Length: 384
Image (cartoon, rainbow, N blue to C red):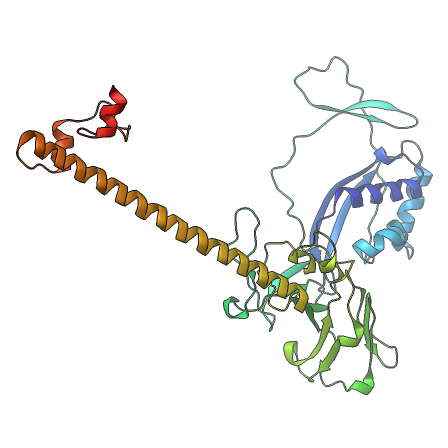
């Protein structure tokens, strides 16, 4: 997952409000991917808070971080984006700031101001390590084996298929929390709920499929296997689920029918049927990560597409025929000029010479002028 600038700003603002300092006093040092004690992937955020002489504020905040109320650090809004707070570790350090006077212009300095002090702090040289963004999904096949598209287009383009015969193997998007794995076509989304226990009967499950919300839980309410607000609308009446009692594609699978209202709006394109994420809380899937399957577009949309393609094909055939006719006419005209050139040369000189020999004996002054051909009546008229 990549923490965007807006999430960083919201985090700093929330922490600054809790401590009672200005936003500029909250500095995020590093955001990195790590593994929790439970073996689950998570994010580690290292940050500093400059409180000046307000040590009570610092100690109160550290007690909250190290105590039972550590979840208050991010608040409910950020918790929907970042997830739950697993652990926290904070401490208080006293730093003596030296005032720099007559500092050379060539050195980098950072001005730090708080309520009670104003000082100039020399900035250390940045490290050469690069923190790569933490991606919250991976591309796999139906069985969960990782796959990657190595032939990505340099301009982030993606291949589109209107016929299943040209399509390769299905590419699934698996979330890093191992909650689900999903793939899609233009009209349907297939979701594997990976946390549903194998062998569970339908009496042991409670499944809810709404227009913008799905939930898969145990019938007794003890566990929620998959839950979330959908990124776009589906048709519950045309959606279904099946549980074959196994794992992956042989386990619990949801079949969601897309509503695709965007396809019937003005200036709509087929790409509007594609979902960039399954749930609103998920990160966006890159457009060029896998090919697009438009083979099952809604019947009216597919009919319009086929008519348009047929019209384009007819236009291409007409243009191709006209191009052939122009080429044939140009060839006949060139042959006529060459024959006349050879006849005129034979009438004047008494011996037959081909037009190639004539051109070599009498090269035109301007070789790029097609009308300047020796013995050509048109060229003689143009010269007078």
